[in-house]
Length: 297
Ligand code: ADP
Image 1: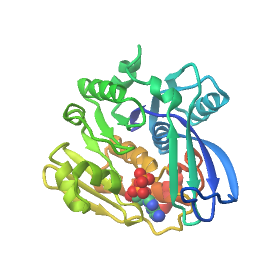
Image 2 (image 1 turned 180 degrees about the horizontal axis):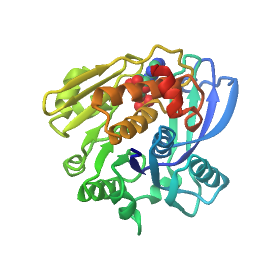
Image 3 (image 1 turned 180 degrees about the vertical axis):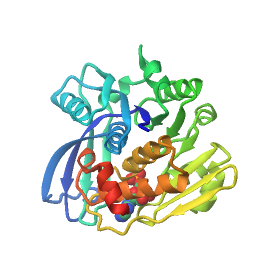
Image 4 (image 1 turned 90 degrees about the vertical axis):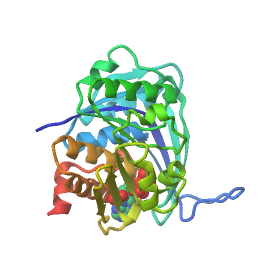
């Protein structure tokens, strides 16, 4: 059964420099290589879900520049429905990424057009209402994220929030979230607890289901019925962890929407993320369903 996933979120052009060691403040280092690749948490999650087999609808905003046209084209090429993707005056969002030799990254995001996604536009509610899940992140204005979450809840859609970049969340927004998927850092910020098990328990006071992703150490799920699931990551040589979390979420939502149980959905999500960290770039690193299955075979 094909599941339908709506994404309300950011679209960026990632400007990626590969270096031995990332520069400290005041330091200049020579990079090895540079490339541009579409990214942004919203577009990444949309592409990950589409490549994993979901029917995906992207609600977002790009600028009137070449980057915007390229982001739109990449989404369309992967079969993503872009009726909800508007083109607004000015520049597209950009992410300035430094990837080091260990595959670690540091990122500056300039939102630009993403700042225009501050409310629902005509047609957005229909796109959301017809989906099984709605994927949200925090790279757009809070008012837009909150309006989308409310539309998801009104229409009985599973609302999945990646709370990144880490920010305090209102009780109103959290009351409309079904599944929260922070990484370890975001979980610590939201829960005020460093230990993932303690953070997970604290976050379950706020939302009914939580997955904390722990990088190479895997992921941890809990819900209010007392179910806990720990899934190790796949041991692979990471070259670029950009969008590991977005790949994880896109595949997780697809698998859950298809009816998989949580442990199976997490295994698929972990396999998808493991494939993505072995490749450079965000949108260019997302695996197909066949590649995910091959790792699990
Ligand atoms: P984010 O990209 O949001 O910071 P994480 O770093 O926690 O998220 O990664 C998300 C998921 O991607 C992890 O739970 C794990 O399954 C997978 N992953 C991340 N890094 C690696 C790695 N080095 N090797 C294998 N899997 C990884």
